Each structure stands twice: as structure tokens, then as C-alpha cells.
Image: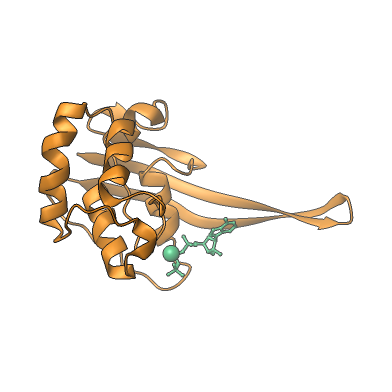
Length: 159
Ligand SMILES: Nc1ncnc2c1ncn2[C@@H]1O[C@H](COP(=O)(O)OP(=O)(O)OP(=O)(O)O)[C@@H](O)[C@H]1O
Ligand SMILES: [Mg+2]
């Protein structure tokens, strides 16, 4: 369960003139967002460019701190304990980042799995099943030789 209450985000931009800050500009990207996401549900964010979707995703995944508000992920206060919350979260981006291109698919999953605290024994089971889930084969080919779609599939397996 994810519960966001009254989340606001104001970006502060420092406009410089030479070495000195000339002016501070404030951009109110989010104003009092309230959101509850129940386990097992799929939620989409729709909005025009600049509406605040990416800002919301960054805050909900503890990559960016909100200016005000509270965020709970499975009872964990994600603003106070972001490291604990991160163990319960994962972000899969649409592009080709968040993978090590010189490693194979298996090596990537071993690395990221270890970061999430999975044991070697758990990884031995998880890796073949997550690769087959996304239609990839275990091979010695480095990710740099994958097509974009294959990299995206591997990202889903990583997630
Ligand atoms: N790093 C930043 N510094 C300053 N302002 C920012 C920053 N990131 C986003 N903004 C501003 O915050 C507002 C929300 O931007 P955000 O990127 O969250 O929108 P979005 O809904 O993801 O848009 P898009 O559909 O274009 O991806 C916009 O006004 C944007 O200019
Ligand atoms: Mg965006």
C-alpha cells in the first residue's frame, strides 16, 4: 500500500549573473497531491506536459524529496526512512538506462538482485524465471549488443 498525503513540490531555480545569484525563481510543480495505491492495483498518471507526472514518480520512488507532505510505503515512512522504502520499490524507465551495457543479462540481474539483498540461492531461481518471463535467453552476449526492445525487456526483468 502506498499513501501520499498533501505532497507539494516547489523547485527553486537560482538565476546567476556571473558568480552571483541574481534572482530566485520558484516553480510550483505539485500542489497538495493525495494518492492511495492499493496492493495489486495498476495506476496510470495522465496529464499535459509539465503537469507534474515525472515529479510525482520521482517523489513516490524517494528519488526526490517533496517540499511538504508525507509518504508511506507499506507502513514505512518513506521520507524519514528512504533506504527502507527503497527496498520495497523499483523504478523501470522506458529508455535504455539503468543497465550495465558491458555485462550480460544474467550478470546485470545478479548485480541488481544482490543490491536488493537476494541470496545467491534465490538469484539462481529468480534469474532464469525472470528472463523467461520477459522472453529473453541466458547467453554470454553483453547488453550493448541488445536491441532497444531487448534492453527494455531486461529492465522489466530487473524490476
Ligand atoms: N529539475 C527541475 N527544476 C526546475 N523545474 C522543474 C524541474 N523538473 C521539472 N520542473 C518543472 O516542474 C513542472 C512539472 O514538471 P514534470 O517534469 O514533473 O512534468 P511532466 O508531467 O512529467 O511533463 P512531461 O509530460 O513533459 O514529461 C514543470 O513546470 C517543469 O518545468
Ligand atoms: Mg515527464
